[in-house]
Image 1 (cartoon, rainbow over the protein chains, first blue to last red):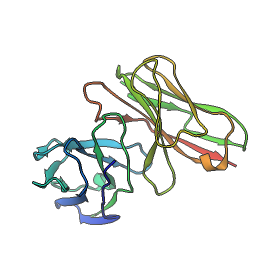
Image 2: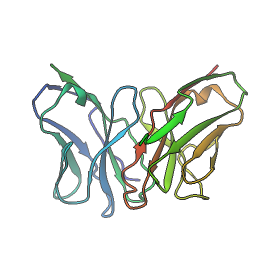
Image 3: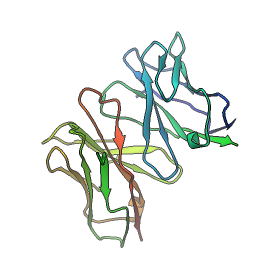
Image 4: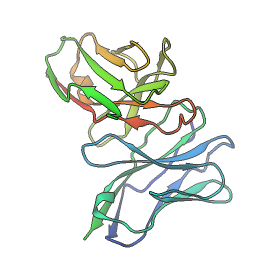
Length: 109
Length: 113
């Protein structure tokens, strides 16, 4: 499976936008880019996914580079409740998600 | 809807004891999964079941068995627990149409002494 690289941690101020980067230079043409997040002491939660085009939903936006070797999860206005570990995952088989270390996002009031 | 439920929430076992972790979902999902998460790490897939009556190994299946009892329930059994199986265990489910979107339960924290 293609691998993703994310920073170990990031900090943000409350109510400011947050851009969480993910590198996936060995991505294949059929790999979808998924983002999940895990709040403290909870199971992971689906955030968003995309293939080639940028995607928006009620939680976040996903910006995908034209060569697909990187992507960015954008939280438009971070809240304290967004403090979590964010996982960038490549998947083309539907069933099997491989979670890496993720990025721990800290939000300061 | 309760979503994905797991029992128990916490469990302490002695080395060599056996136990079964229970998972149930009420979303009529076809696929169900068992993951483990060690401290400070991401989740690793133990087993999954793409549909009722089928199960497949994931990344770390050794030391575990699973049963897809019916469409709702998917159990994970540790026959002879070892300290290396101390972890938080998460069950998840997904629909056939949206297999990329997995819904996770709250987890079972297992300690093996």
